[in-house]
Length: 350
Image (cartoon, rainbow, N blue to C red; front, top):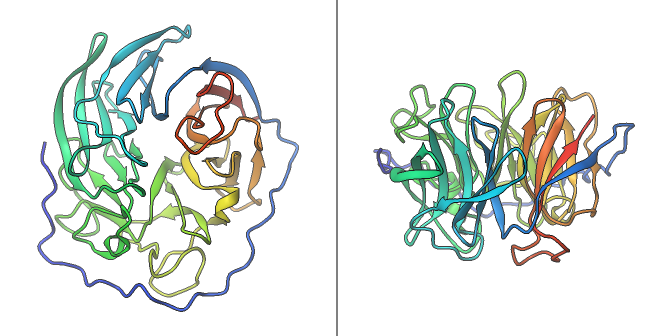
């Protein structure tokens, strides 16, 4: 388990200042004949839920951003305290963020804000709670905002980490920095074999704040990203691609930068978690307080559901049988707290 080692050569910093590129308006929400509805309340009364992961026995783990504590929710809905992650220093958008269970079901991974940085730890999954912590990755920039935090294992069995620029815009274009990137690691924390920049964990760059990672049925990686004041993005990720921040935001059609597949005004989205189900990426919107659906084959426009019904939406996780698990985020200091908040809901999407 190794902390980050900076790449030998620094990438040249690109200039921040540029002339804004005129962009088309974001598409208005579209309705189709799909029935999307909450079918069950899985849990309620949660404090600042952020990470959500499924154990091999079907139970769920939900992490509290501000408390640094993980709650286990059994299949019958009963709740137990799974344990507290050591070293969490909450503040602003930081704290205990993403959770992921290894493909073999033996280890739990957690992305957290510590005293000096954001980092990834792992724990052996023992009966009733996590074992001692092992360090997977350190040195991810931290800040009061833009801490990224989503982690997920891909179809290749490798660990993907979405980071933010921590308020230091230039970091997103600096390949020696872990900020504003999607990272691809071995389970032990080394740069994964076949990464686009040899010896580096960087898989893609030019991101402002990645909080959503998911793979479609073809094994393609998708990521959700907070924009600044103009455009939030859903991107299809290719190795080594540059997604533009802070040089461009949203669709720019500019050589050397990858354009998003879909974009929204921040008031309509502010995207956090995403999941793939039923031929589409489903995107949980915080400020937009809705669930977006974006077909992955390009055969339709984005459509939105549950508009305003449950407040801010943070994390979405796909389940077998055409359902999603969806967490609210109304106790995070930016939402209107409603009775029973915060919740985990089961949502039918067919």
